[in-house]
Length: 127
Image (cartoon, rainbow, N blue to C red; front, side, top):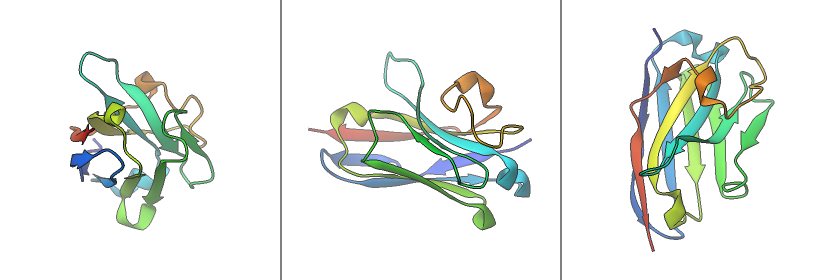
């Protein structure tokens, strides 16, 4: 059973930056497509970004393109999300997720395809 633990959330003003991390418990992390999702109050959980097993494919939601950067360090079993130029609408709980069996992360934002989830970390952006 893969366990994912997020960290790095917090409160910032609009225009600020945060870096989220997600550490996996098992060395099989390197075989997973990894994604970041977020959920605002009263909203459905939505895909933010995803990165393929080897890092050759990266995907972003249109709302974060040019501001967020996803990366992974397979040697450290860690996934990152660098968030710059944050906006109040970026507020929400951010979750990392993992799925196996899909090398290139096809349908990257389909949350039902991800088998493992972290507990989430809160990001609050004030105007």
